[in-house]
Length: 195
Image (cartoon, rainbow, N blue to C red; front, top):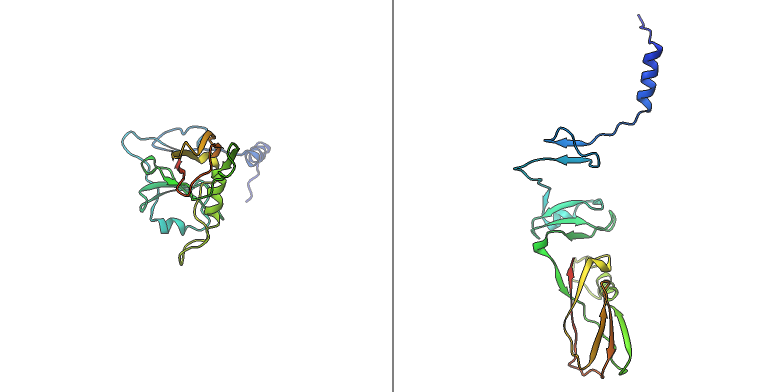
């Protein structure tokens, strides 16, 4: 025997079919924040994300942008700041803040009295994207920071009798004036520090 469905029940089913439900997941909380997809509340426990070696992390197929893992080799939380097809794993833990010297480049000093500028971030990125040679099994490129504002820029040494530093932008552009022609033993040390 077929039971008849009332018009009110049909109307209720149609409304339910057109109604989009949205919900947040809450763990140890009766009501998650509306703006969150997941909220975890605790006063005596933390969140444990997947712990992987660097090799295991790099073996993840097409890791989503902003995917987080704890890299046990680097002892640091890592985030993919790249794309699924070209992942760039960035260390987020402050005690592992990375600093490194600027790759070697020639800074023009031939014409005394000239004001020059050099984009150090672009020079760094180009060298890391296209190394001249690599060891067997090494990737074709070196992981590099994608944006100039991902780094702080420092000059730890230069000869103030050779150049005068006019400015150093937050994007890594160095403006300087040539005071006299450089000798073979003149150099500038530039250090990059991850923000």
